[in-house]
Length: 59
Image 1 (tube, rainbow, N blue to C red):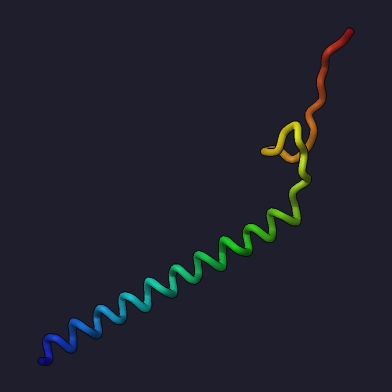
Image 2 (image 1 turned 180 degrees about the vertical axis):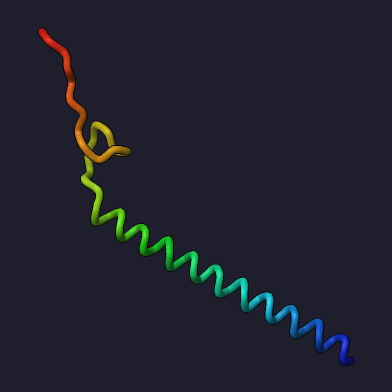
């Protein structure tokens, strides 16, 4: 019975640790999304850079 209690305690401890890590990652992703949404300038020409590129073509 003692061995089963130890195994149960280890399983509960690992599950709690995993839940806390996943909660931290979720909160970090949420904050990164907020920060990026506030700092990005949406552009249809170049959405990865966030600003329009200049065309150096002469006519």
